[in-house]
Length: 159
Image (cartoon, rainbow, N blue to C red; front, side):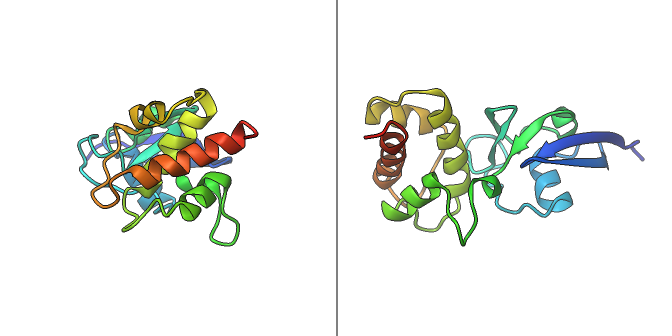
């Protein structure tokens, strides 16, 4: 039996302490230990981006990150962006631009786009496409996702 390791992670602004096995993935910790099921697990190889969360302000693949690596970190999940009753600006842009179909990739797209919107000017749609290139969507064809991020970037920039 593997000894558990005590970790403290601030998730969506709330400190969370837990004893976890060293091999527990951050995605599983969020979903199973904290019941934050908005983080989706797709490929489990870090390719699809569905599991993207922000850790200390940077997007990471939670299916490739161990929970123990998040000890002392600040983690943001899609649940931090808004609620069903009060969508955040990026979520609202996705709704207005019809940027989702099945919705499986949407949490990862939203978190990657949140990271991009915080850090980069996103002057062109090619900038947005480049930033989202690590996230796979099998339904939409990406055009409406790009349009939603463009809309959020324009609002951020006062356009």
